[in-house]
Length: 397
Ligand code: CTP
Image (cartoon, rainbow, N blue to C red; front, side, top):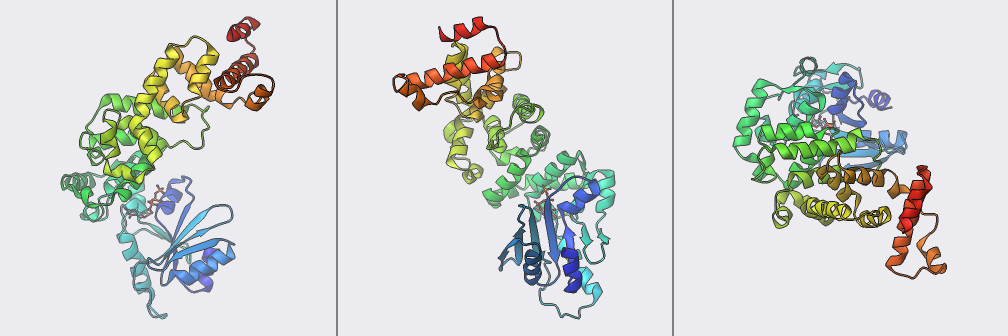
């Protein structure tokens, strides 16, 4: 549709950025970025109408987002040239303007475009070759100085695709890092990049590389390389990625990893970290207190004998704390298995009776109701697992 529209409106339109890179790499990517030469708004309007999408357009930045009925997003931007070129502008001028737009981008692999008018691939800076060579390279020497968040992005693309940051690019990155430029960048922009990394599928690789390049000091000055931290991050990654039993929709991966990364700091030090001001109060509290609360949970379950009592205890903790507790213990330990079983089945088992029904049946209002519900839950799960009856009786003693 975008291509037909580009042709009928006689406007040059390009698919740009990450999606072009991922098309070449044959990696799925559902973020469609279009650059329109000239004024993007009328084009975006027409495209939104044709696709029955909703358009939000920012007049000031000349960019818009179309949200399609199925949730897919299309970003539409005006190429950063004069928007009001004469309609009869020469083709070379047109090409020049997309080239300038691409030259402003971070890495050669992200600075390619596909013309939706001719379906030609525009690769002015060797992006295809760098994909072949598996290299992340900046387009010019000032790239990290112009935008220091690109230091994080270099690591992100390097680790995500198992590429290498090119030698010259690495030199420039180290030089920019030593200039302490991040202190002039808004916390929101830095946190956005960090969040992207921590939400990648395998953040342990990204974090290891950030340690190696000493980039985590932007989070807190004490954040030097630490093997134990990396081990804990890997355990969390195993839980979230390798194990298929976790289907927790509202899990904030970035927050969980930060709770691990910052576990040695005092809560008051964590609450003051500028970068974390972007997070909600709840998330900051989880980062500040999550690790110690998980220790407390482990202690409690160690000292409880009965299954239903353990269930009752664990049900008072959020899933995030339970995951942190699993990361602290290890898979050889009984507590680890108990917590895994809890997340896998107990937490999802609906009791056959509700609290109000138990009260009607005579269970006194108050903690006894929750106790009884946990007993029932333990009973149902055990029965579902076909355990011997002997066990079931023991639950209620
Ligand atoms: N870009 C840039 N410099 C930045 C951020 C973005 O040059 N600091 C450019 C890159 O060309 C990038 C595009 O804007 O490809 C879109 O940015 P973003 O969505 O952050 O990156 P993607 O490449 O789409 O990455 P992802 O696959 O993680 O969405």
